[in-house]
Image (cartoon, rainbow, N blue to C red):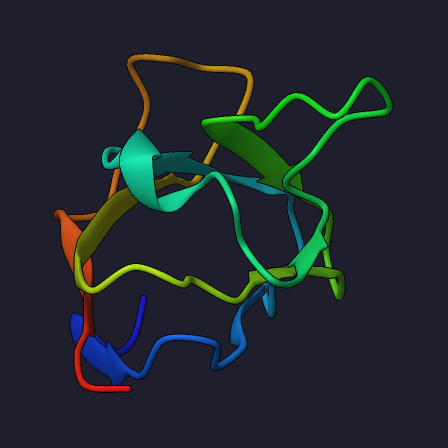
Length: 98
């Protein structure tokens, strides 16, 4: 999973794309950044609830546009069906400026 640290400004779109042949699951650790985004694709369910764990199918992507500054941390599970399977180190998006 690259990059391990990424920088974004409030309102910029951050996109996660699954380039693998199998589904992956992104688990967000900083839920306060997940609500009130300007754009969301694949992170909010049909009822408007923000998901802290999102499965991304091969070739698909999810995105959000954070409006708050701070650090959004997440992990990627390489087998979404196995909670004890391989997982990435904690990755960070540093949202700075404006």
